[in-house]
Structure formats: C-alpha cells, structure tokens
Length: 123
Image 1 (cartoon, rainbow, N blue to C red):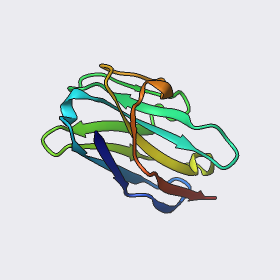
Image 2 (image 1 turned 45 degrees about the horizontal axis):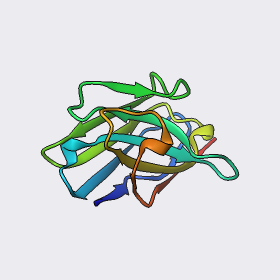
Image 3 (image 1 turned 45 degrees about the vertical axis):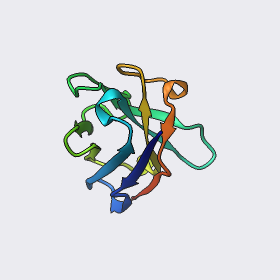
C-alpha cells in the first residue's frame, strides 16, 4: 500500500503560480512512477504530468507544457507540480497518483491516489 497526501492548492489570480506537493508513505517511493491528474466540475479526470521512478524522464499534457513542471525528491518521498502562468481553465481538483510502471500517462495504470487538492484560478 502507498498512501499519498497532496498539499499546496488554493486560490490564485490568473497569471500567478502555485506549487503542489504530494508526500508518500508506505512502500518504497522510488519504485513508482508518479503522476498528477486533474478533474474539473462535470469533466473527466485528465492527465497533467508524469515523472519516472528516478526522475530522469517527464511527460506533460500539451495544455500545460511550458507552464507546469513536475519533479520529485526520492529522499523526501515527495513529488511536486510547479504551476506557473495559471489560467482560469486550470481550475480543478488536482490528484497525485503512483504507478508501478516505469512511467505512464494513462489513468488506469495508476494504483494509488491521493485525496486531491483544490486549485482555483480567478480571472
């Protein structure tokens, strides 16, 4: 089992920045690829970014490329999502997730999920 707890969400004006954190406990953190997903009201949960077990490979959704950066610190069992140049359409609940795959953009390949943290971007 892996337990994931997100933090860092909040209300920010368009153009602002936030950094989300997700801290894991349980099994070996470095054995999992980590991902961030988001879900806006009335929409499906969608992929945002993923990072490989070692942190050497990352992928981001086209909608956030150049604005969001995923990183991880395996010594701290934590994955981050730095979000810059935020837009109102980034408003959603953001979830971190852990996958036993080496890296994955697919929601169904993630076994463990956090509770989510709300990000609201005002115009």
